[in-house]
Image 1 (cartoon, rainbow, N blue to C red):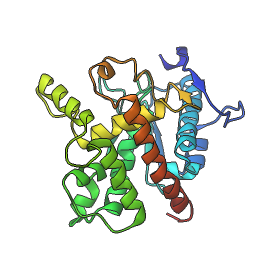
Image 2 (tube, one colour):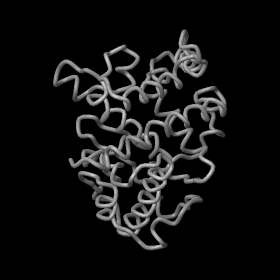
Image 3 (cartoon, one colour):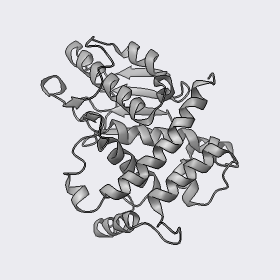
Image 4 (cartoon, rainbow, N blue to C red):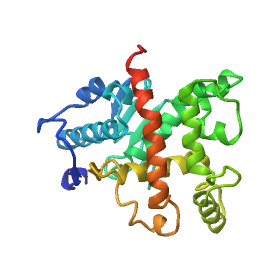
Length: 264
């Protein structure tokens, strides 16, 4: 149970030791709506609010984003302990723009699912999507792989460089070994999952977040390097992570400045 577990964290004390509420999370991080499951009791609610607040604050700190930018201009919804799927830590639902964390198993998946939410949010702003339907279902990483034309903007050029660094070889002529390993994992399991651009980027993102030298937050991203998936080659290696992190910062810091100057 969540209320009986302890989650390690090293980083600035953004809450100053205070108990926060889910309403505080909504206001500080600019979320649109928060939904709590009916089976979440008060003790779980209080502990989860602190954990999620710290996780989102750490994420903003790492990416050099203003906290309000985490809510993606008040389009991102959050669910806790509501509508979970058996065996699934967390998931992102594009139709509702909702990041859902399971009550007892959502720990460690926050960074991964935030990337999915961001990947979905930025797609129509970065790529020339032809129909309204495509605008609602597209993910930027998939658009890049499908060679959808990018909207001309310096930030979009930085986003494409992030995709290039993560998924292509240095000369841009072949897939990165990280992608080749993901393809091999899919062949072993007989499905298409690990090599999806959305999942390649989400795993790369969470690996970079976990490896950050100043922040260690097990609720945000947990035990990636020691996992069986990492040992099987399912994450970027440490050198590749450093390259990806640099591109993440090159992109998110100026994006955060742009988002903070706009109104929803």
